[in-house]
Image (cartoon, rainbow over all chains, first blue to last red; front, side, top):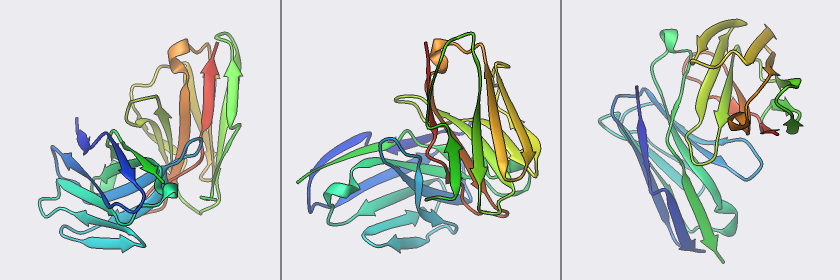
Length: 114
Length: 112
């Protein structure tokens, strides 16, 4: 089946530093999604990417849909303590009978030291 | 507030109990999903419902029984679970086309 490799698995950074994480897939996706999960809560959608090469920002977050459609990255600039959490990438195949099934990466645990 | 509400938030049950998890979405979506999230594992898709019809059962043991009476409500009935079933159970919903899934806050299930 499809697999997503997300890296790094964890990051320990100082407040103010920039962060970068990425996901690679063994197969093509039509949509890439990035979610953040805080302790005790469900994943919250950060950015959705729908076209190969697309670069999208949401505040201090920037994500790109790789040209090959097999990878995506997420950057966080000028990190702050509330950026702490687990970040997940997810790939969604084309519509039709896939019913929007997602394949998730293993997650990147981000810790920000004040 | 994501528009997807799960109850209860926490549940502790014995292996012989029967309980149900509930999910309700207020987003007008037509597809709903159950996921299992265990420590140090990617989210595992369990069931998919599209317009109240089950379209995916990802080899889930029969001790988990889903029910979708309408497009806004999704249940997961639990019966004679095992300790390894302890996990966070997440519900999600999505609209049509390539719209992304939106998640509830989950039910933290502990099996004694």
